[in-house]
Image 1 (cartoon, rainbow over the protein chains, first blue to last red):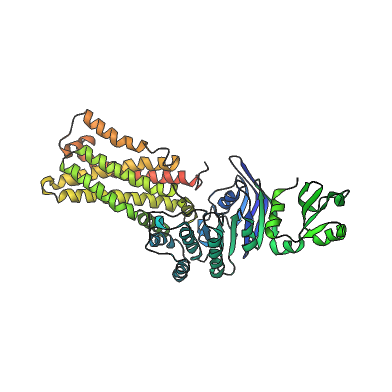
Image 2 (image 1 turned 180 degrees about the vertical axis):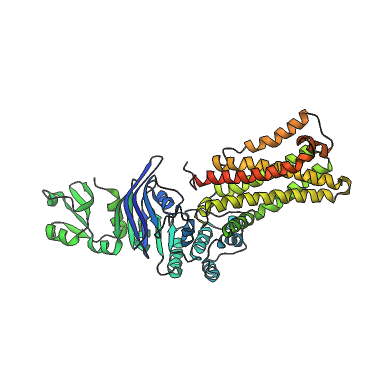
Length: 283
Length: 215
C-alpha cells in the first residue's frame, strides 16, 4: 500500500518544469528524495502537502486528495526547511496556538519530546538557536501521531550532528506505520535514514530505489576502455571515460562479473557513491 | 465552528505580544482625540490602528514560513477567512470601547450619554466599512502590493472635513457625515451587512488562490 501516489503530474514554475510520470511512496517506510538545487524538491513537497496544485495529473495522499480535504492534514506532520513560527511568540504560546487544531494531540508525548529536545517553553522563539527552532517543529509534528511526516530539506538549517540526533528521536517516538518523506541535497542522509530513495534530475524522477536491494546488487566497474570495446553500454549508469579509463555503476553485479571476469576492477559502492553515478547521467 | 474558534485563538495568541501595546497606544490617542473634541483625529487614529491590526493579522503569515504552517493546519480555507473577520471585528470593537471608556472616565471630556452612543455607532460603522473594503483587497493583491492604499480613506476624511470647515462639535460632525441622526442606526446596520458580504467575497478570493502564491 502506498502513502503517497503521484501520477502524470506536471507543474511549471518559472524555468522549472516538474514532470513526474509516476511516483509511489510506500507506507510505513522512510523515503528520501534526492536532488541538487532547483531540481524541484520543494515543489514536490508543496504538491504533496496540498499547499499547491499541479497543472496536470493526480496526487493521492493517505488515499485522499489533500487540497480538497483539509481534515486529512490532521494526519500529516510537516517540518519546513526554515522555522515557520512567529518569532515574537514564546514557545508555549506557539504550541497553544497549534495544538487545538489536532484531535490526536498527545500532551504527554509533546512534554517528553520537549524534554528530549531541551525546549524552554517560556523563551521567545527569536532568542532560540536554529537547532531549537527546528526541534520545536519536529516536536509539534510528532505530537499529534501523524501517519505521514514530511520533512523539507532534512539537513538545510542544522548541521548533520543535530539532524542525526533529531532523526534518532523521530524514529524512536514515531508510530509504527508512520511514513516519512524527506528531501535532501546530501546523499549521506539517504545512506543513514532512507529505506527507499528517488533521484530527481531537472524536474524528473529518474530512479526510485529500494536501498537495501539495490546496494546488494550494484557495483562500480573500472578498467581500461579496451575491455569494454564492442560491448553494449546499456548496463551501466553514470559512465565516465578519462584517459582511456572507464568508470560506471552497474546495477546487476552477477551479470557484469560473468561478462567481464577479471578484465576490470569491481568496487562495492557506498550509497553516496551510487547516488553520484545515478544523478550525474552519462557522458 | 471548532476550527474557526481555533483560528481566532491562534490570531490572538500570536498577536499577544504586540496587541497590548497597540491597544494602549490606540486608546490613548483616541481618548486624547475625544478630549480635544476633534472628530477627525478620532477617526484617523482608530482607522490607522485598525489598519495596523488587519495588516499585521495577515502579514505575520505572509512574511514568514508561517504560511506553510497555516496551509497545513487541518481546517478549511472558509474557517480561516471567517475567523479573520471575527478577529478583526473583535479588535475593532475592543479598541473603540476602550477608547470611549477612557474618555468617559476623564471628567472634563464627559459627553452626554446619547452623544457617546451616537458617535460610538458612527465610528464603528466607518471602521466596519473600512475593513470591509480593505480585506478582500488584501486577499486579492497581498499586503505588500497595497500597503499604502489603506491610508487613503482616513486621510481623505480628514481632508474633506477640513475642506468643508472644521466641525467643533463631534455630534454635529458625525450627524452631518451621515446626513442626520436618524440615519446613524441604519448606517451601522448597513455596515454590518457589508462586512458580512465582504467576508463572502474574501472567502471566494481565497478559495481560488493557492496557499502560497508563486513568485
